[in-house]
Length: 239
Length: 244
Image (cartoon, rainbow over all chains, first blue to last red; front, side):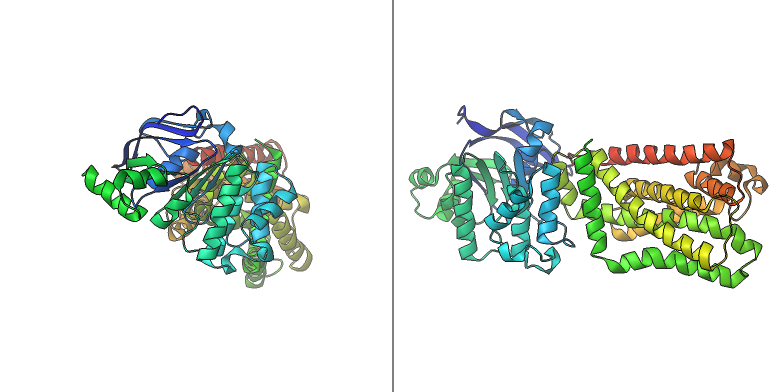
């Protein structure tokens, strides 16, 4: 499981939120240059794990190492892009004003903003106030802020929720293009039909890692063709 | 701390405010209206208007910016943008200073316009320089926004944040010397008021109004500036990169 080229390596990571143990001790790797899917039902601890990777989560025990550094260390802040589950952009600003702000904080040039807007297919909406956009468009603005500056690691919390199938396909293609440029993507989702678009899967349930495998390995291991069924089979055998 | 990041935050806060013309109208219109009402109520040459007019002008930015900043910061906390900012190469001080600078600029506009009305049309007179009243108003605005940033950490909802205004500001207003001179207060009240920053903000304004710009005035200004620094430090302590 431990490859030398891991972009994220979590070792017995334990997280307690509000007195409840969300992750009892998670150990997993995210291979550098991969598109890794973090899949599991709502409440399985996906967001909590991603928050630990980007360094905004209080950790009760264990470690998470990101790009060779301690997760959340200052040096990582310009190398890791984070898209939160609920769009974290300013609703009263335009798409462009939002991205300009994040770009200025990161010390990027203007063209970075244009690239990010084009990447998420919001070209015609740069001047629109975010609050007037649809939920899916708002999510893409939030995604665009994470793409700014071509970070080495992209941590995306349910980036395709509520998007129409065409747009979802486009975004997954974008994710793979970004990975080809050498970046690593850690993408969470609660819908299994997105699992096939990932190189590797981390299957999470109740804070425990059910499996770390490629979609093909998962099918071979469970004998199921549908990944949904494969997930069910894993749950059954783990109980 | 980075000048670039601080400027980015200040600019973004101002851009947000620009999208909200009604708030801008209220920030500038309400103190103008109150100065006008005060003058109409007591009369142009009344001692009350002449006594209260300048302190009101100088303290209003404190109250307005306290409210606006505490709500804006609370929104930043509740909508998740604060968490997002904490993953960026942004020092906490950059965020606080950016807010302070943005609202100081708003206060420059607010205090200048209210001064033009009060000194120009309403007949308010101060013995000291009028520009000093404006400058003190700006300092009070910065004090208000830094305190608002700090206090917003203790509010979970906007209702709570709004209630912090009377809770934090009204006792200070009552005891600052505006309603009863501090020498005439019960000792325990005078002792308490010595710990309130608004006491010094008011005293500086009152001394400007009577052109009494000596050592006590310098102390007042120093205390106000010191409280701004203290509020920024306390505010930074309430901003956590990692949360549960």
